[in-house]
Length: 247
Image (cartoon, rainbow, N blue to C red; front, side, top):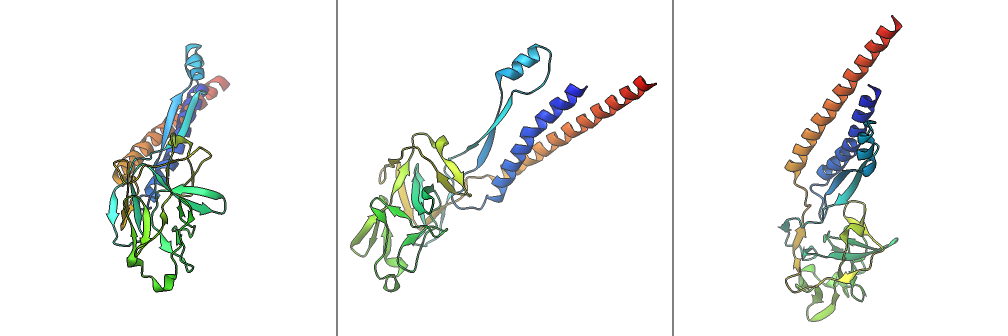
């Protein structure tokens, strides 16, 4: 009986983690460049061994979070500082903690003419920061970014965006909602071809399907409630058995 309570409790723990993951996905359904998280639950060898020996517990239950890097839909903004990556790749931005990577192309111009991310971090080119000379005299509408990521004002080329990719995206770790860090070696993403195209005046929306997440949330809540009722029933039965023993 006690094992039954323990097994129900063990099954509820990954559901709690999954509940938190789904809630975070729903909260970021409107966050530009956000990539949804999911949970992988596996039963390790120890769980099968214990079942074969009649122990019946789930000590081998393991759960791991992973990020879905599939592309989100694009929305047109007409803002020349809004950029989207069509295909694999990430923008590189310079933060106090080092270079970080993001799909959030909601950029703007700082007072000194540096193109910065929504968090105020400089956006990197292949040769460093991208800075527009005399920003007070340069209207944003004169800045152009072509499909290869080349940034120009008039006929002057200011640099080419540093668009990078990785062989193993699972090595990227989230920082905040749409920023990633990694020690894995980066490689230049192929731009201007079929692999990667830079779209000026567009933003990539979150790849979260809010309706699907809500359905999963309802199903998960019902499963969680079922486990709770099972534990209460087992606890009541155990209490009655103890009363009979005392008699």
